[in-house]
Length: 512
Image (cartoon, rainbow, N blue to C red; front, side, top):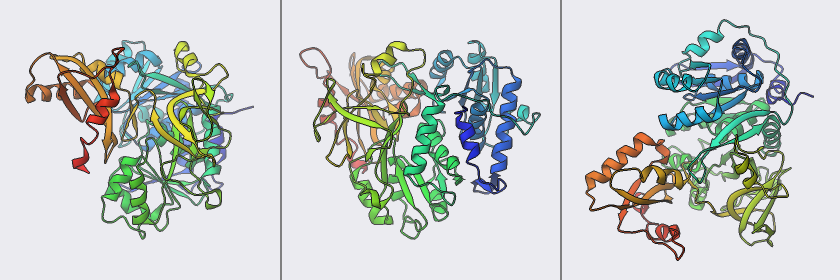
């Protein structure tokens, strides 16, 4: 039986495939029909087949958001390959690691980065490097133009690998979560049903494509729902406001909602067609939810998921299923099992503990890391999320903390250990502790508390900031560096980050 995600997506296309599937507004507005999605992904898939790649070949993509990037993803699925999306903010050292670890047969990047990426890729055994730009140029499309517009999708089993999504690790080394066709398809079908997707829906897509939220949650639901997308390559509040009256569904991270609230044009009239606003990837502040309701008449639907598990829980979409509760991420989705434990022992209702899950969307493990895979699961098969939460009598999950010091800034995960390792290599730095602090725009901001080897001038702190921007993706770079004479430690010598967070909790209050 063919369990290919692409086959399911293609079967969901409307009967009239010459109707619009994706519209891109702007001065050079464009429309992609369902036929365009089918034929363009076929041409790209035929190119991949022509390259005679090995079975299960990985295709890594570090490209700016465009409809063509989505088509590349669909083509990789169609050709039976494994898609590896990479954040466009990753720097040279980070990209070198991902290419070496994933061992892709094909790498696709922007033309501006071709010189750097191709050199590191070819030196690590990559066979093919193509370019893809947001203006429909690049060698990938040039090569694909010579191939046919029809292609029979390669059959895949449910447990065949479909994507590897890298997520930061607490030791500083990124881990590749292995997601199968079954993982992705089961979650997409669940969301299509639970969020009531239908053909007359219009998704306003303003999320990046290297992230689970934008690529898997948003695109899969719309494609399987035969729902049109309005496509924005970047989130710009004014452009989003212009398109809200033509949309029925909007997905965003909390940062996007706070930026929309800063726009005077956000009103009930602008949102009159909207069926649902959905938020995820980071905790939504209760005051943001309340202000958004007051301004628009809509209660944002908050949900919860991870790169390793896809979506796990959601506040109700239908009013008949209950209320959307501020401070919660809703109930476990159909097919998902969730339990709260302390040292492996299930806890009573209402008590906070480790959030453990299992279900058809939980990943197979981490790419080439069997030890880390084993550590991520309990002996009876539950995945350890690393989050701390509690479940009330009605089944609503509230997340109260993260057991591994994960920082979520603007919807993107940052682990302190990776940032600390880089900071500690800077001249003049003795040691550092990286923490997340409340921020009115990003939800959390990365802050570094540094112990210097001697007296420090402002110019030296500025030089550290500059060096970090050259070494780390922008979202990992500290918003502030605070210099202290020592770090607070407990009797075992462990840095007490809770004391640091308490001491600097109001650091960004003045920007609110």
